[in-house]
Amino acid sequence: MAEQARLEEERMYTSQEAEISRKEEERIAEELSLRQETERLLEEARIAEEERVLAEKNCEEEARKLEKYKQMKAEERRLKRLEQEAKQKEEEAEAQRKADEERRKEQEAKALREVQEEEERRKEQEAKALREAHEEEERRKEEE
Image (cartoon, rainbow, N blue to C red):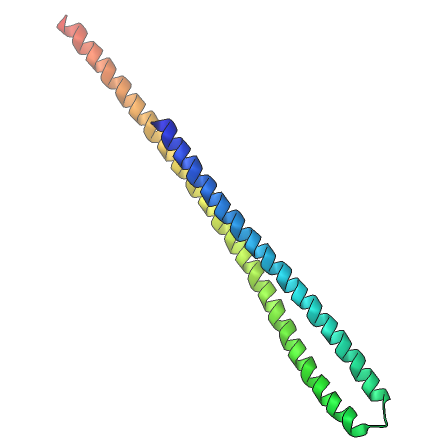
């Protein structure tokens, strides 16, 4: 019976570990996605900068250059905003990872406490059973 309880606790602990592992994989996937998005945004910013430089060199169409410059500035603002958002998401992901790690440690500590408490209860029950058997033996001896 104690073995079944122990096996059940191990199964529950393994299930908790699997859940923690799944969450960790999700967090890693999200971080990878954020990094890829950041790289894409940086490439867009580089291209936008190159386009701005080329537009400045083309003096023949001043009106078009000015309009394109305005568009690029708007794009730069958008990209800066997107970079800030990506940075914030990365920070949030890191905070979530730390929280998940803390939660995992707490769950492990709780599972260990539960196992120790169950072991203590089992030992107490065994000791009680031994005492009762000893008392019963003493009563039998006294009766004889």
